[in-house]
Length: 67
Image (cartoon, rainbow, N blue to C red):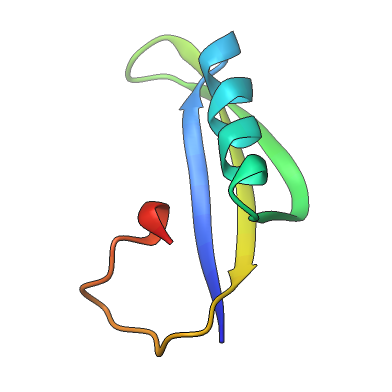
């Protein structure tokens, strides 16, 4: 079973650490990162999709970040 997450955050080093942590837990990059201006908050935002193969059935209640 493959699960999917979209990691997002302001354009700071914290975003890079968020993605690096996911990679260290076995998640794999999926597609290209995104970068856009958030007009409501006046900041640049980043996004990166990641996927991971897991051995348990998917459940809508599962905490994806804990997999």
